[in-house]
Amino acid sequence: MRLGFTRLIKIFLQNLFIQTSWSFTTLQGMGFLTNILIGAPGDKKKVILDTHKGYFNTHPYMSAYIVGAVLRLYDEGKKSPAQIKHFITVAQTSLASIGDLLFWETIRPVLLITGVILGIKFGLWGLIAFIVPYNIFHLYHRIRGIVDGYRLGPDVIYLLNSARFKKVQQAFEIIGAFAVGLLLLLVQWKVDSLLLIPVISLFVSILIYRLPAVFYTILIILIIIIFAFL
Amino acid sequence: MNPILISLLGGLLILDKYAFGEFGISQPIVTGTIIGAIFGDMKTGILLGAVIQLIFLGGLPIGRDIPPDSQGAGIVGVAAYFFLVNNNSAPASLFLATILGLTAALLGGAMEIYTRQLNGRLYHQFLKKRRRLYLFHYLGLGTAYLRGFLLILIFTAFAYYFIVPEGIPQINQQMLLIIGVGVGIANGGYLFVKKKTYIFFIIGGICGLVLLAL
Image 1: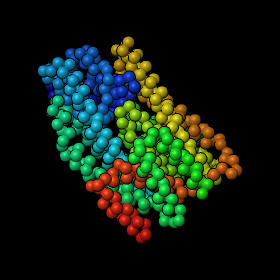
Image 2: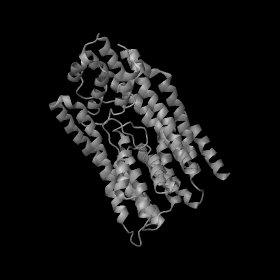
Image 3: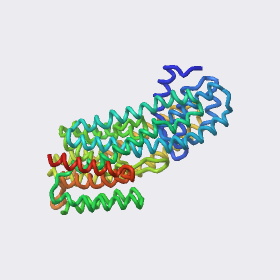
Image 4: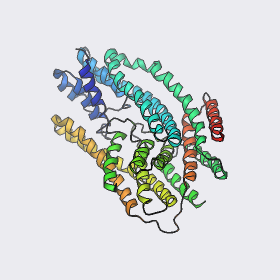
């Protein structure tokens, strides 16, 4: 059986809904199940429903690599459902960590800082500067993930060492460091601007000591109230 | 525009948070631009969206961890400002809208936990009626939409009718930007400024100051 264009599109569109029913019980479990069922051959659907109705969690964009590989394994029929489940268990953790690092901790914040700078200086260009490049990377991994997953089967996890992950992450880290420095461009330099120093110092300390996010948000509310009285 | 219409739209935008696609259209810098354009003042919408964006730059949805709802904060903060400014001064509206946005982030995070518990019930229903997998899965769109709609409605309805009493603190755009940029530099620095990259941070800072002076 081939992947084929129509099948690829169906799997891709369903992959956009992978987190729709995210729950504490199975995390992305139902989303993953619907995603492989939509691309699976008719005679395998019952086995898939019985085998993969539980827990699943990975980075949403990276899930495409696993979906592609699982469909390849069911199409070939050489591995047992238990072996396929074992592959999923291993792959979801590796892809989750690489996806979180690449997207949530690197590409997205870098492009958001760029969008903020351009947005404040040039209006609508900020939105465009974030949305367009972000979705080029995002959709590339969603689509290419299905294709490569299907092409390589379980070997798809060896792609984690490829340039599409490492080089891109390194390049974005450099752009990110530059963009963070460039944020100073947004502040008009008056006496008030010296307040930047205590704000930066305070929040760097909070981030280093990994204080809870709720505490962090409440502290910002308090700082806004204090600044309003200045 | 009224609170119900903005909540209907905001509920749709917030689906992008995780329920559908995750294209990034629910990020505060994007929703700030959109809502600002709807109210005819894109510049202020972008500014408020940008500040909330920089505050929550490091809030990462990793694994089971649910950080405060930055997307909800963006929509609430910007929409609340435009409702408040109809009856109040701009600096007082800016102050209150930012506080409402950040409070919405906290409440939104708590509501998110409840939504995901509700989705767990959908999963148990699926186990009983396995033929209805797709129905129970897509009902997750309903729970996510409802959460966003209610969150935005609570705060924007308050902002729509609220008259700021005399003596409430006020904040100007420049002061708010100082907080946003300060927290943004801390967040961004924590993520990107390392031994290998700190030189680019310094170059970026110098470029920023030079461009500012020009």
